[in-house]
Length: 214
Figure 1: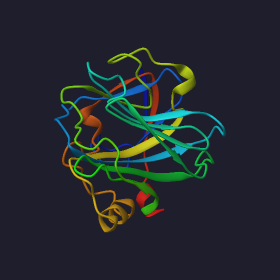
Figure 2: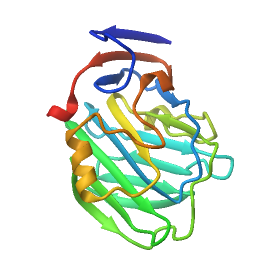
Figure 3: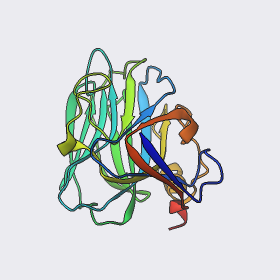
Figure 4: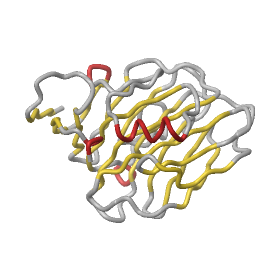
């Protein structure tokens, strides 16, 4: 593992950006994940390679390798919950700019929403009603797991920058999502962005930048 630091005065939380420089790099969330019957997952991403697929968030359990997945593929997203696919068609975001991506979902009605830069872009209902994400799985940023904790495919890896991944145990409102896009100090209740709670494998450049101010 090679980790390079650029103007990082501490290794905690907000404004710390991870630049994943190779397709073999992955970032493991070390905090345990509980059972979730609703969720909001938000992350800031920057992709420089046009037309390249990129796994942003991959959560795998013994039941489902795609227990929860946010996977970008040039014309939208593949989102999985309990191994079931939801296809969300969107405008491309592989343009070298920073993008704030959020997915919300609730088991009670199967309602889901995709937010781009703090604004609802797509929404639907009746997706995985009555289901819940299993606890105790393996959560990775920047890679797509085909087995729990491994079997990564370089063609699906994210090469670019990410920061401010937060995970909540409920479906945030539109006003709350807009607030998170503009304020990087807002923390998720399941996982709050803090590199002390990450295990990094591969070549990564760490730097300080306030993407929310953009």
